[in-house]
Length: 186
Image (cartoon, rainbow, N blue to C red; front, top):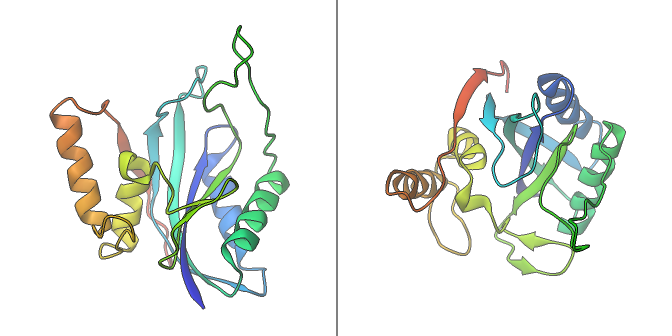
């Protein structure tokens, strides 16, 4: 079995319910064993166009053990998103280019899969923007403080601290994150 970390996010609908429902849905899969999920956090949208009142996300990180390969797990996550109302729509700017991130009922990101490093078109591992997002690093360091990024060798706690330092120095935009609930029996 391989340990994988999954990022959960939602800014449409009842984010707490959607995230916990997706977590429970993973438990119905024969080849996936949910191990632990972080507290739920309320975070400001980072790097995306959104409209009020959807400017805040509910986020969490979960740890699973799986016998699936990385692409099989990714496809399962995409399927669970659709089951929870996710609609992937390309938004285009005036010049026809696809624009950034947008509102979603459920977003499941495969953050890390064992020590796998992948730069394939469909799947980049570890997640390429993980080290710049408090909404990933805070819950990840909560459930796995000694997790090591296979590229940098840094622990999740060290990555979180470095990001906070970059924010304090003005090298990264501020990111608001607040714990909204702790999951019992994680």
